[in-house]
Image (cartoon, rainbow, N blue to C red; front, side, top):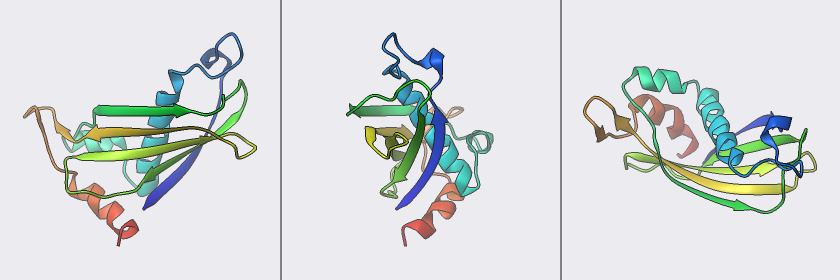
Length: 136
């Protein structure tokens, strides 16, 4: 299993009239967590794209428990629970407030996609090599 954490402060423009993080921004926070998790492995989304790999979202599931509030410092925990041979990757996200309370969970499934061939492809070897030690 691989996990990484990053912090995001809830900005005023991301909140609704109640001062709660607007529900649509949770997916953006998941994206920040995914990008930073890959970066912590030693790769970037840009490098994957330069290899000819795009990663569009195929599925998103979200569950809300309590709100994130304006100016809260949120910990985004991004977890990979499995390393499959399929042309997809499933990121589990957990958002916590500064008190350590679980606010939200989500699962985002992305596919590895070759934009020139317009087809799904396997996970790039470079990413497999970075992840494999966490699953041995």
